[in-house]
Every structure is written in C-alpha cells, then in structure tokens.
Length: 120
Image (cartoon, rainbow, N blue to C red; front, side):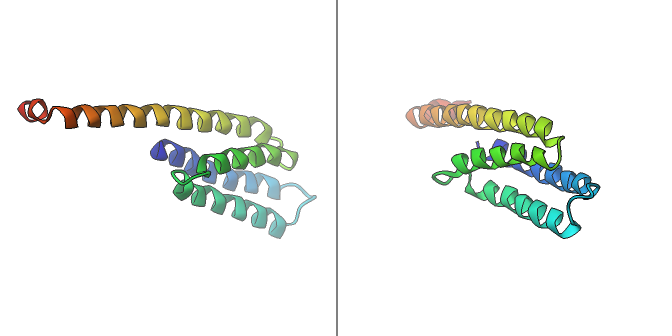
C-alpha cells in the first residue's frame, strides 16, 4: 500500500506546484501568499508519504485530499483535479491493501511448506 499511496502523493506534489503557477496569474493573490500555501501543501504531500503506514496516516491522506479539492476556490481546475486524485488515492489505498494481504498470504504459505518453495 505504501508504494501506491506514495506514488499518488508525489504526483500531487507536482500538481500542486503547477496549480501554484496558475494561481499566480490571478490578480487577487500575492506571489508570497500563493507560494506559502502551495509550499506548505507540497511539503505535506511529501511528509504524508512517510506517514502512510503509521496509525492515522491514511486518514490524514483523506483530509489532505479534501483540502486539495477545496483549493478549487482559488484555482478552479482543482475542482476537477482534486476528485481525480482523490479517486487515485482511494484506488491506491484499496488495491494497496489487497496487494499487502496477498503478499502476507503468500508468505504464510511459503512458511508452511518450505520444502516446496526450495524445490521450485
């Protein structure tokens, strides 16, 4: 699960950076404000990569995605990209858990019959 979720978060790191470039075109926001908000969000996306396997890490990821969608107030494209990345986050969590369970099952089967594993 960690690899899939981290891949999604790193992709979001870049999307947030590009959204910052778009937000700079808005005359309503100062460059400093845009890059402070985007910088914090980019930092959070990287930090979340390390927190995924810790208790509450996935929940923090969900909160991060809600904030990403809310960023559409400033950059309307985030109303489209946010749900797309939220769907990717769901898929990463769901299928990552399926993969982890399958690996654990295979490891348990290999531990039960080490002779068959050596013969192959």
